[in-house]
Image 1 (cartoon, protein in one colour):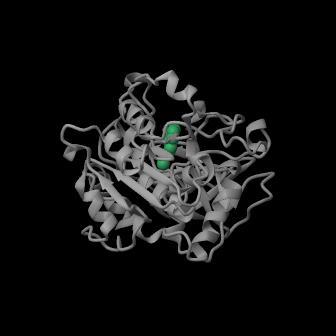
Image 2 (cartoon, protein in one colour):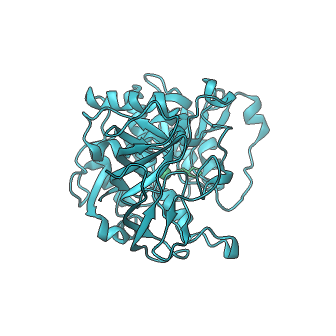
Image 3 (cartoon, helix red, strand yellow):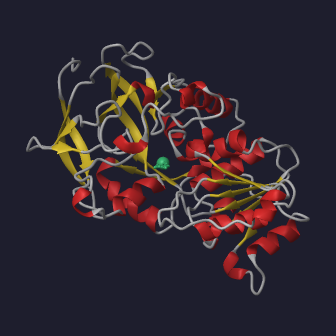
Length: 388
Ligand code: CXF
Ligand code: ZN
């Protein structure tokens, strides 16, 4: 019986930016009101972990820190007022809260919870404090309201979704961030229709998940754009990995490095008879967002921005293209409202409609967690499952 008591367990702590994680013993406090303590079963590395792991903010940096925000686990105990979950439930922690109470969460137009804004990303959403202490009794910061690189974590009830235990845990894990983001962007934000043309800039897990969402929605042409030819091999199912065997629905590839003397957008315009109906930017570069907008069809082309631009570069758009009907939109977490949409994606998987298997390119043990960083940094993996 651990309920109500602190738990001592192993966590992968990052002590300063860009440094390898170190497995240390931590103390995880019991959940407070509206909180849930979760035993992590497996977790995976999302590119946002890398982005914030590398980010050196000097003296204001949030280190030491426990990264990880894509995971699956089992509820160990719940705090006061938590009624929707109980011990033993299979759950996904999610960085984007779904509080169900604020104007955004109540509206079908938004998933950008205004009750728990991004400001408190280094602690718990309600009070900003930490539930982790290292072996010297010093607090360790959280990451994105989740912190999954630990055997136990504490998450707000707004950041956790109960799922069916029928789905294999490592498949469910993918739906905790990256794959839900991509599928959601195609399914919910763009609302891709049957027979439409799609261009995806960046074929990481998010980009390939956009392809999967577009395939599910019946798109007829799905063009993948990437500089790394190995990404095309993933799609062909011959990536040198465990089970990257299934296709995601990409029908055509464009490698910008191989487009001599002609721009990517010109190539896409030619391939789609005037521009793609839907374009998705999945990298986070303003210049690529512009390429995406240029590749979308005059009159109705819609561009969805998923990438997080970290350089603060402005976006320049020709107002006359907007005037003539092009639209540009964005979405955090693919517009996914966690509590309702994730169980829907789980059902799609269980009905054998949604392909999740191909995203898992590697599986390792918790002790080898730094290997997952190397693989993703080198562009060698999509998702590496880290078993606790
Ligand atoms: C990101 C999205 C924007 C803020 C930080 C986290 N998503 C997760 O991978
Ligand atoms: Zn993520």
